[in-house]
Length: 419
Ligand code: EPU
Image (spheres, rainbow, N blue to C red):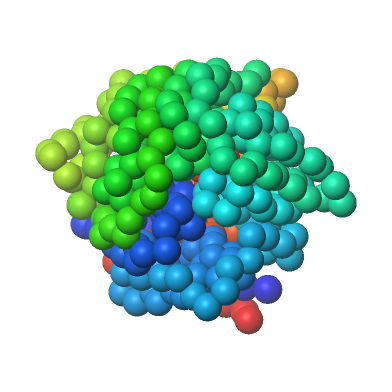
């Protein structure tokens, strides 16, 4: 088991460049199923989750090359319309092949993803979306089997108890590109990653309008072509490194990013007292936090749940009592017990936490149990005095490209140990 050995208390300063977005890259890779022609994706981050998606596409029959952030996806010899449990269980986002497989081949079998470290993550909206387009769905032996001779466009509301669904919107948008007639998705997810998928689909010949708003309209076409497309920067990664700067009292600039995708979290950082300088594609952060945080996570353009754990660490440093409530994944708090081992003072009640600020964190052995929890714990270790051993590093490898290298280039003392 690999561990990160982090010697905290060093100010992080300097510049780094944002990687391409994991959560945009995964559905964009899935979109390659919609055509036999070559799809070239640029700025694909080299991450464990991307490797799982490569295996799924290869299992389906795609030929893939991936070097220096450029991925070329082509038709292989034979096609299978199945995503097996052995692969899907490694990454929930694998559900994203459901829509394109069904639309392109008229039938498919995709394993149900199963459990998740931060509570229930149902796929009912994905299934409802496919049924709305006329698919017959059965759930058997842990698999979703879907079939439809030809999908038919329809108007639908695609929201559940917690609002819109990012991958649910992506799945329906992809399926609808090859459906007969017009599909209207109401309560669609507005996340930049959905807009990026629409961008690729349009460059493949799809007819889509409204991406980035809560109503997306898709006019089905007969076929889609190849495309060459550059993926957006990873807004969650960018905010993670900005947070690394402020929790260590340093000054960090992230280049090649999209500040417009981070308006809400940057507003919170500004409100609590940090200095932020943005231009079109870079963000610089410095200064001291002077006030507590009060955040509720929600769908874009709200505060992202993927930054909740990371802002919990920032709150440990701020004066007063900060409050964070989780509106997307009510149980996504596995970081708080580990943060307590470092000395953080956090109380939880239902889906909300209260963080008593100005905590003095000290190094200890801790364990990450999911991706963003892992990144947050690494930041807490950078803030703490002495050395922290962080286990469960494979979670961080799912979503942060060259994590230690990037932090080291800013002055962090961080090493990987173990097999
Ligand atoms: N939901 C349903 N039914 C569904 C689908 C979702 O009730 O069929 C609920 C979820 O349980 C949740 C809410 O709707 O309460 C939103 O979930 P969503 O479907 O939007 O999540 P997702 O598309 O599966 C993506 C990201 C997650 C991120 C969420 C929310 C990817 C690959 N994953 O997941 O990213 O937390 O959106 O923004 O894009 C991460 O990167 O660490 C990560 C978990």
